[in-house]
Image (cartoon, rainbow, N blue to C red; front, side, top):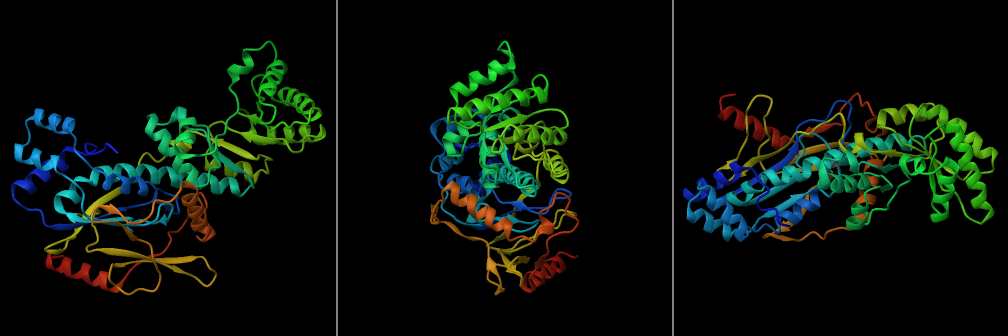
Length: 445
């Protein structure tokens, strides 16, 4: 991964000052997220595997060094240092797909100060975005599941360029989407592909029925027909004609798609029409600027929709523009470190998160503790990188997805709605509380 230069300038200037001052002792940084968006119940940690790949593969090549030299900011001795740079530290991290909550460490880096400092911006770039999209997608998937429906990710055309489209499709799939319209994401990650047709295809034929027949001839076993280009109910009648013709040939019309109008009312009428034509197996797909709120309303209205195609609001996590992930120094050779800035206080020391299970088998609470505290519960962060090398096997995407869905299923239902009124309980362990009190007293608080 050619990402050594995926950093903010101040990471490099701080590194240069560390090198110049021969200050490169061991330090520990932790990545966490300060708050949840209003109404959200949890995040799904995502981007972890990308982060591990990045950490174990950082290299500054000749082009990088030449660019930095041309800027005239850095001494040759620092440029020589970068040319030899390798991450040789240790990383503990939660598994990708783990539900997480505010102020819990997701990833911990222990390394030489220059190494641990450089990676801050890239780690936040990878984990913040992918976690945000996976968490938004989980909300959408949960809403659809309450109506026994599934979600396909249709966001490429509204994504913030190629990388966001790819990583967003992957994050949505981990969170439970059944497929993506993004062909490159399908190729890169093995995500099932999903898609129908555009209005332009239908408009290019003399009649809607002619368009439907042409498409069905090419894809007789997987046609989903877009029925709202002109009159939706007339479109449904035309789709039913094609559906019966396919059935007579031993084929099956896959579905019809609604992309405008009152989706709930139209879905009911279309379902009745299809059933009356003996096409009960034909699924109804709905799209049109959907999100978890609109899907919940459709579910409450008993709309007979089988698949929701969700694009803009999912791939951009609307209305959440970004999440407040942070990466803070928590310990170095001088001991535990703690930021005391108002409203931006960070907890000190190397930490672990312990997840506790209630009598009903659901997750009951988390406890944030110092890494060596003895706490009843399952520790969430495990060793992923040692001496700069990956030691935790990289899981296949399907395994990550299965794990994520299984973990979300263990959360109490009240945290999986679209307007969560209370926070999942996260407690601070006794030794960590004592350390916080000591450091605050020492600083005059």
